[in-house]
Length: 323
Image (cartoon, rainbow, N blue to C red; front, side, top):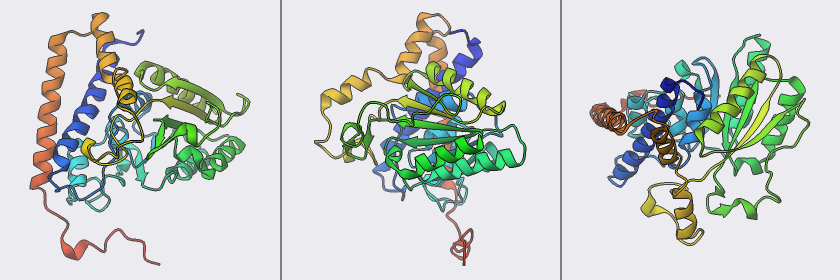
């Protein structure tokens, strides 16, 4: 809690906004106007916010299919996010990508990948570009525990260590790859690549504690900017909703109600609110103002998306690679 009140307020606001946006998407998804699969990050807000609060606008991130929070936390535009879900020309990917292919290079968001692990080599490559261009930026890669099963992770870590790249690997361990629990896929409780600290700084943090995430990433960013090389941070968290779609569409039977309720009690947003209230860094009236401001932003974003035009038919072949 040594951070300035303004920083703490911003961390809370961003987590609250991401949560409310996800809930709004979920509540309207059954209207069948969003012609895109959506993967909600409810329960994982502290990771996106804690990581991106440690970055500068010109730092790079590579995201994945569960990337709404990453996009917003990195400074992405809420209007263009919602417009993208509705397939509109005003979307951040011109309505061509949908929920799983968000991108906004203006804020350092260099794309989400629907391929599990697909963003890992991309983010590593961005780290190589940074080093070749002798810049002080860092490249951050978000991926889930399902992607930690992929061989490309270890190939990318090896390359990043070998070339001492300014890359930070962020594992969002939300316990499940679709319906498969991590205990059925990996042996032991350390899913990260173990290596001497002089080559790769590794750390496991409580991914539901935004301050833990923020602190760990700050250290990794300093290491990367000063030529210390890559880091690997495992953020242990939980996705409260199902793999895809809204709550009502979650497949039954692969996890218990008790398990979900246990993690709901560890809600990163509610726990941080309580912490700031208890420390008198914020009061209830300020929380209410935040909620009102967020509600206005969300209504504006949905209104903007719905009144925006679809891409003109003659423009549909644009933005494609033609070999």
